Image (cartoon, rainbow, N blue to C red; front, side):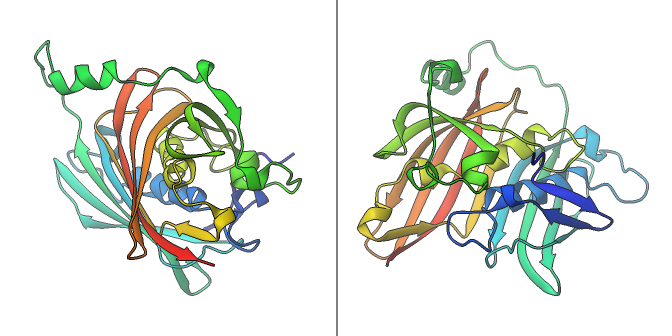
Length: 275
């Protein structure tokens, strides 16, 4: 039984077949490297901890750029300071397969500090009123192209989907609760940030406007996630919508929730194509 997306082998991460994506049998689904890059950036704390160490910092933004298809081969992940600081930090992470850089990420980390807020926050109250029904109210579903696939892959075996609005079979906006079924790295408990990254890459897939059956592709070469609160629990909901343009460029946008309420947003640039 496959138990994780990656196995650690000294300074390398060896992907399991659970990282495989739908676009090529030799390439990983974008969610898997996104989660692994976020893991490295979240943990990064070189040398002596500064005033505002990683454990005292919250990740407020992660931007992942998929430079080329990430192969189903061992990868090395390296983190470095782009901007150290006591209150705001910027960490850069790159992923290489052999001598080739295949993906990179930047993480914005902000110091944690208790702040007294007013009892009434209109934007938060509106978001809570508009929050989706919980995952128990959802309908379990899988992407159509994955329903008859026996070979394990990320989109069919590593995650669970429960739709409370829309669905893989319906174009347009959707509300989908997503749960990562396995750890990102074997022997570790995945952080809430890793679970959010794994879920957020599905924004364009769950809210598609152009059908693969009609010959369209809508691949995202990037993913940006903004978080204003640390996620709780296993389930992450995407309230997602996709906006294509006739210029071959699109955007997918998702409001992100856990079972307590809103946690942030995600954005994906889209490369639209006809095949």
